[in-house]
Image (cartoon, rainbow, N blue to C red):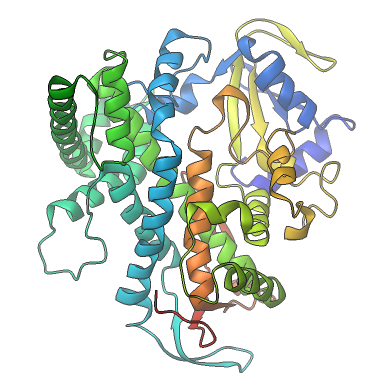
Length: 486
């Protein structure tokens, strides 16, 4: 079940011919797999109160305590409190700050790595690229950018990711490294050992062995320090003026702390920390994955790349300025590309619910405790909803911004889920990808190095917290036709 294409084959072979719904019997309970838009709508919206999140899937994300992702029931006071506190963090002001900083961050990647490591490269087909950057770790490149953005826009910290290594990690670099351990090793150790009925007794030893305990303590201590510092600022401002005036702070964590203070502390400090951690995981990993897949698709489709660059050059006045928050709705073709990347390569391919009581969805009886596997990836690849669904074609999306927004609610395009459990940071993710890609397209051409006719050169799907590309090699060549002085 790990390979998404195998799930598609399973549903086609054994599922209902009309809706695709597929039943599976597990050892101790039933599972139903769905990808039909009407059934998704019924589970998420119409009968959403009957279905809660599946404990075993989401427990792994409860690192510092309960958070907006791990609260199982969206009708509970706990979920409403988390949503009330988290929502103010994603304001227009924060998105403006995000766009402003994202362009600076990706430029750090260009200056410190791509420009310093460029050389001459000849592809297998004989094409020669002079003075170009050949990726050795495209995942690392984009993950560093999204982590750098996370540091400033998420926590108000400089992770010093692109600073030259001196042998000793700075405080920011240490915090960033520890976050990565929790994002990756920490999640897998908890999933396969900490939540295992057989191996749970080994969990403390595994945490020590893989240094998850050290990473946890570093991140927890730093977040405690920030929470204390920001709370003190807010209390001081309120004592002096009777109003909360936090100055220039626009990072997500400051917004969370401020909102929680205004609401008289409806969340504990550990819950605020846990919400901040979940935003970090989602914002860093998913956007990095989307950027990798987008560059892969543009690298093998020069006509789409050229059209996107022409739009970027026109709107951003041939490189005389960088993209801002206000440019997002104007850059139609680039956003169509990002939406198509999210359709063909959704970073999170499925979500899970469980029935609190016996019910029906469509014409199908669902017994109590049935697990519902909502296959978002297979909804995106369904020929019933998308013509030539396996083709990468940005022009399937409307060129008008308002018309594209309507697709967010029709249950055929669901990379961020839907309903009241829709990813609260979905706008943040879209604006971040837009800001990074617009600057990249201003400055670089992209070429796919892989010869995918050869089995050993195929780009693969790698499943971790998200589904990203494996064995991907790209060339980035600096464009000479634009003003890159900004």
